[in-house]
Length: 84
Image (cartoon, rainbow, N blue to C red; front, side, top):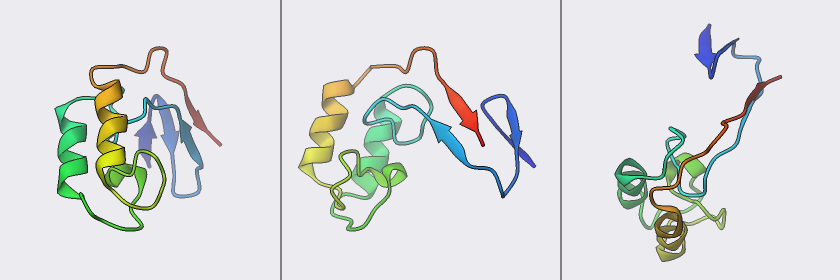
């Protein structure tokens, strides 16, 4: 068992959260750590959000950097985490 938000979850749990576009590590703020995620995966194909594909087009590229830069410093206020 582990914790997601304030809920205990298992391998059978479905986790749902909100995020600011560009928040690759889901720590509720778009910052340098998210830029590092993007830069480490730049050029990757078929990546996930957690690998810097912030616009969901299947590649980490300049378009994802634009998404991150447009939201740099933004936070996810009133974070909502759901466990189903």
